[in-house]
Length: 256
Image 1: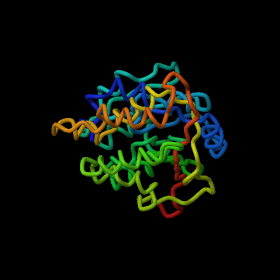
Image 2 (image 1 turned 135 degrees about the horizontal axis):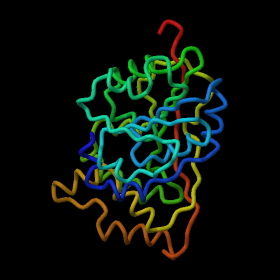
Image 3 (image 1 turned 90 degrees about the horizontal axis):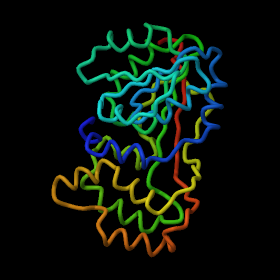
Image 4 (image 1 turned 90 degrees about the vertical axis):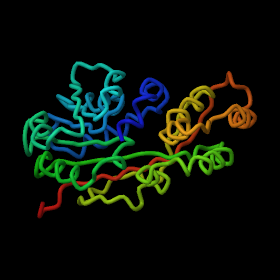
């Protein structure tokens, strides 16, 4: 998975939408303790720095060293490179051991993980009782440009890794072996300000675009850009766009 995001690490850091601050306020309200957060698959650290507003320390891990080079610095966030060769013991040690983490977040990344291994590690790391895990993502159902982006998605499908396709289905079939805590935002809109250049950068940062380019296919061609531009109108105007976001939140089951 890491290799899919190495080449566009800088673009990814600039292009990906920011997550609403209220998400982190609501999540932190669910944990009785606020000592340690783990942001797994942190990428550029967007979620990590938001968690730092609510927790004393954030450990932010990623398998991609290139992504971490573009992460946002923060005095309460410690970035840790965890290559695929890292053992569970190494990762738990970086987190302070078992039963030490108040909240685990995975922003737009859990579908790339070795889920059985990650979930087993998450259960060991989470404080019991009281620890929670939240995973979320969004897809390219971006209003008011659904028609043009649907055509883009259709052209991108042959280059989309099967793991990434769970995002298209809004995590409906994603395994999530945790007890619901009554919070989630499945299918709820994520409304943001975005420039036209930002929209194009977002599309270009996607893994299927990189895969297609390696095969000589430009999914964000000049023709696609012109088509989107025609729907956008004045490209100097920043517009409100709406993503379809979805979140799953749970706590380890009693038998875990």
